Figure 1 (cartoon, rainbow, N blue to C red):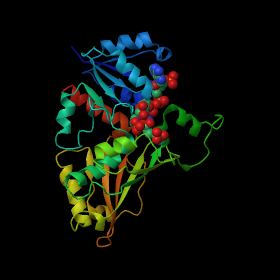
Figure 2: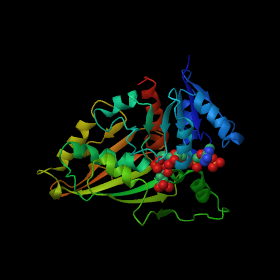
Figure 3: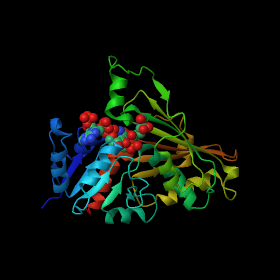
Length: 311
Ligand SMILES: NC(=O)C1=CN([C@@H]2O[C@H](COP(=O)(O)OP(=O)(O)OC[C@H]3O[C@@H](n4cnc5c(N)ncnc54)[C@H](OP(=O)(O)O)[C@@H]3O)[C@@H](O)[C@H]2O)C=CC1
Ligand SMILES: CC(=O)N[C@@H](CCC(=O)OP(=O)(O)O)C(=O)O
């Protein structure tokens, strides 16, 4: 029997991309709710209970509701793409490359929280340096980022694309979350193993999919007398043996005149760069990804395969 998959929120931005990725999969049966019934709680409950794996692509409150519908119904595994359970102790953080143990934890899990798009980039840069003892726990980490506008879901897509929308956004690039209380901060701190709350300053650009996440560091304030080479080597060692997170060689990074946030659009990989000038005491660590690829839907399908024993 093929495993049954239900994408709750399949007509939204993340859900649609997951459905597209699963469209050609003959090894799975996708249970699909008609678009007009997408908020029909009774029908959703039936599908949630029938599924072997439910992938929640909903706002936080609706995700929590779906989880409560499944309470006591342990035959349905859950992947939640929302922020609701990313620091919850009962949930496994579905970032297989986080450390040596995370892949197996995801394989064994019933409840998996899919990482946020920005945290995927930032944690992928800081966590290996924490684990290697290079980045002190109390380092004052800052994270600056730009996302494609699909990161804001259906509402922001309409605001950016429809000039007749009442809350139309005309800007080509804008900062937001200026009070420094973005919903991703707890996740960044917890899974980045950071003692201090990081400063997170996100922005959005007028392109649909793509993301750059930057973590600048002063190497004098790191542990030991580390060079750019040492930092790149620590990242490379951490991600050795897998193909989704790619650490770019220093020589290649040094040749780049600019970095395009859309470069990895429609892919599920993430590239990590160490920029700077050796000996200057500063580096800019950069993650490049598609906010809907490794940042959301691609990661959800990766987690699905791990949970089904396919990967
Ligand atoms: N977009 C991105 O890049 C990323 C998104 N995520 C997360 O994925 C989740 C979904 O985001 P996204 O796809 O962007 O959002 P969208 O707004 O594009 O889609 C959400 C979908 O959920 C439906 N929905 C909302 N409330 C309910 C409800 N109570 N019952 C049933 N269905 C409901 C919406 O229906 P309706 O059309 O009626 O509103 C819509 O189809 C969020 O939690 C987000 O944080 C994670 C990483 C990246
Ligand atoms: C551009 C934009 O608005 N991005 C969203 C983050 C993407 C998202 O909602 O999902 P995750 O929390 O699961 O990453 C935000 O800043 O709230």
